Length: 233
Image (cartoon, rainbow, N blue to C red; front, side, top):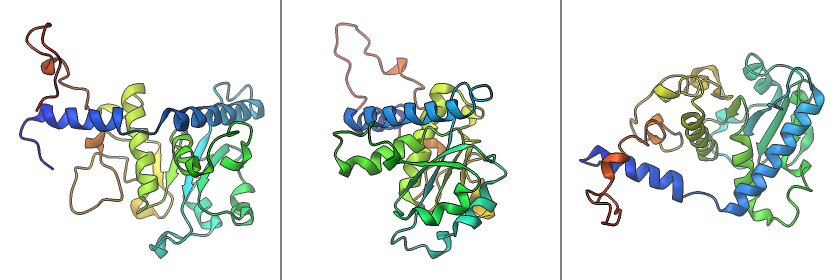
């Protein structure tokens, strides 16, 4: 989709960010879980981690068709250990139900899962858990996602939105310095540099989705304050 006027293009991206979003019920449930994870991380290291920062994964297993991404947990640890320090609290969003699979990671990290927060999720429809998983994972200090996963892709995009608001390192270039893929060295640093949209790659996100999309808002204002503010097309 190409817009002749760049202002229309950015308006469309803002519309997606601000209106095609998860419902307040999902957002609020995720916020409660994030607060609980941060409280846990803070209790474990009150002096070294007063803000309660935690790291996060999306580990895709299930029926995923890309066999090369189905790494064993010890392989995942090898790929992430340089970015996530041992003894860190790590939230894991996953479709894999068996905890024994994660033992090699649990040997190094304080792993927590959505099901560990029953109190915060009381009364929430379990059909919403996947979306809550995404939002919680998006708030990790460091995040590792799964290559080819659109579920991970959305988490990266939400992290991109946060980067612009919070002006994290590299925000002005659209890069996400603390966001990685755990599935291999080749793709690990994909979000460490700006990459324009190219080819038929639907499973990952690109910086154009979040970078500078609030630019030009004043230019869309009506000439007269008495006129209603309309969409730019």
